[in-house]
Image (tube, rainbow, N blue to C red; front, side, top):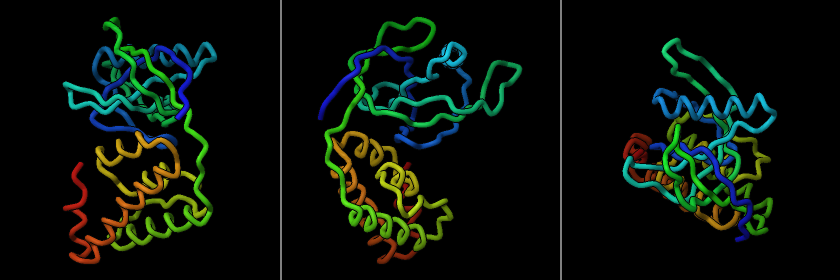
Amino acid sequence: MAKHSHRVIPLFPLGINVLPGELIPLHIFENRYRKLLAYCLHLREQGFAPEFGVLLSNGKTMKERGCVVSVVEILRQYEDGRSDIVVQGKRLFELIHVLPDEEFPRAHVEEISERENCPTDEQYAEMFALVVEFLESVGIAEPLPDSATRSAFELASACRLDVFERQELLVQPDEVSRLDVLKSMVAFRVAVVDRNGPESVDEIYCD
């Protein structure tokens, strides 16, 4: 795996992780993250991307692999300073170290450039069919990715994986590895539902 682009970015540790391409709503209420959002919006006014990094955190420790997200919409700004926003996952990064707190968390990170190892159209088609089989078997009315999608992350986003499974996808070195891991995750779900019925879906989702 090639790595590049050392930079300092605002950091937002969360109890969820974000996949590249995924749209995620966030409610901003803590003062330091209000300042982080204000900084990002200032960047946008200056013609720069309003980006920050999201890392999975349990409140004490953080994972080292995360996703740079961009603010794509401000849904609502409250009088008390809170905001509802939508962000979209953009690029993977590796945490190098967290900088001393100032107004909001920042970190020195290394953005990830994956090695070129692309699945075939047949592999994507097989994965798409498996995702559809699972979602239909449990009656989940998710908007399905387009059948022509060429993104394991997009397919994964439809499957409601738990945060640990999503993290496992984030750390894969390339798209082929990611698709293989996702296939195992979804095939396990299909097998559980086939054996125990659609109601067993509640036992599968543990996030």
